[in-house]
Length: 151
Image (cartoon, rainbow, N blue to C red; front, side):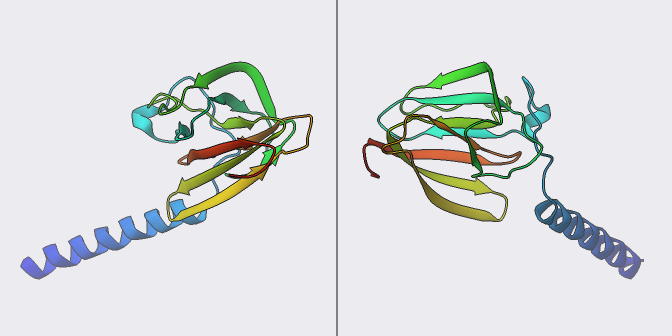
């Protein structure tokens, strides 16, 4: 009896580990934008750890791109949120992108399940902004911003 229970528990643990591995390996859909996320699942979030404000954008409109993809298009500016220093987009809401302002360089740390990395988005000397995707399950931490060069 105990052996049967342990065997069943082992199979369930293996099944759970396989499902977790598949969830990490398979890419998330291009956009899961919406006003809310069920129990915080599938939400993307932007956190502002810099000394200047950041514009978050609700909808990434292209079917391509993963966290950190930068584009001069691929967003709908119909729903945006200004994030003051020290604040973040609301928990339970899905915010698919943020703007890197023209003339600025942003230092951004990204986290998704199983991965953590930092990127500089340099728009110094540019006259147009760029929009950066934060995919489902991802968080962007805007660490610093500087006009004219990278922080």
